[in-house]
Image (cartoon, rainbow, N blue to C red; front, side, top):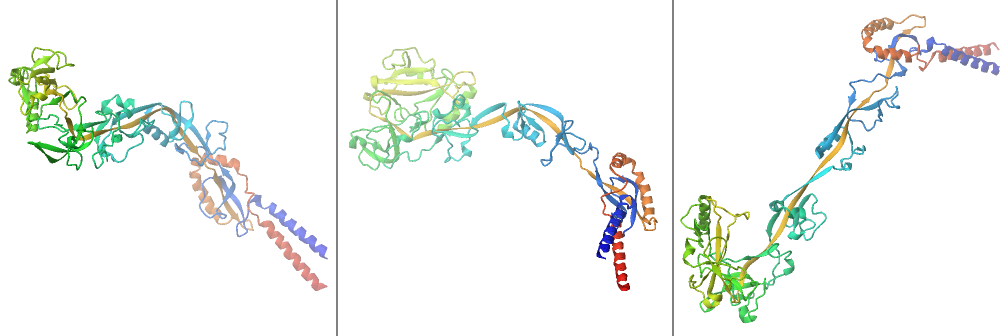
Length: 556
């Protein structure tokens, strides 16, 4: 009996499978277990209505043609593109690229390279290698511009590398400050307008006793650092003796305390002679001996010659120094330069009655002969008897000779000056030679820094390819359906579907290509839908078998 039941069960399941495989062309029923049939053709446009009732989604997908409006010049890094027309560019390809234009870039700026990369252009160097990072593109030319550094905009306590030496970074972009001229690169030295020379303060140059720390004087004297002379009211350099100088806080003068030995560059208190004695002043001077203390120039000071120097031309005009009003003196000089007018000059004016004659051998002014009169720049000589000096022991004047140097007057840029009449402008100073022990009084030591700024402009030569990128996506296919009842009657939605079909026909022409391709891909039915007919038939068989077995028990 049991074997009979098993056989019946197997037969029922097979019957259900057979029924499912023969179910209405392979289309599945709706949730109400009704059959349906396709209406119209498959389409890429999603129909209106309810899925499973008005339409179904087919397993097949449709790949549209390339859309000419769907082109970009900015690729998506997540997409793998193939070159259009290459072996990899198949019919099922979803992304492709092609070169639209090649632009030649020659000696362009860094900004142009950045713009090309930002636009998505393929930048390639001379060897054809594509550049994605601008740092990998080698400049075809680099222009270096060196300009003076504006110290006012810099922190004077911050000094870059190479301040006290030459460096291989001396021409690197940015600011550069050097403590001495010799540390400047040759490219800077060649152009005086390329750097700024600024006076700087040297911290702790002197100790409490006035001693000089010479190690802090970097570079060459009179170039990288120099003494600033104390000037008399007539602009002559002030001279002092060992009797005027005292070591700091020492009541004894150097002449008294140290045997008259004055150390160059040391700082001393200045005591001024007042009659037969000396009184302390508030001034401190740096002392420096002349190069040859036994034979040196002594410029006429204010007590010897209140004018000392002046400015003018040889024969047209001149202006004597005004010790008490330097502003008025300079204004008068400028006015004469601008006008070129006057009554007399150096030769035929103030100097004409003092017997100045030109020194023939300027290298031996005391021994040289003289000739002629004042006629231009040079060294001239007279005697103290012809040019008397006040408050001056003549015994201090070697050979009783007074000298005058006439030399070009220069503007702020170091250029020789000419007046409005085209005449060269000169200035002069007067002095004598002495073997008196005396020293220049200096108010400070001026040190200099040199600053410059380097800018480098890079230029590039390369090709820039304008690349177009295009993508497309597969689209699902839809099929309208009409439900069929068990009695074979078409449901009401068939009428609706027919109406919608007419409306869809209006737009059929716009989708003709897609629909044509879709027809080739779609079969009569959708074989992948879940089929319930066979399952239902199998369940009915099992129910019949169960009732039959129950009835048989009662009979027994």
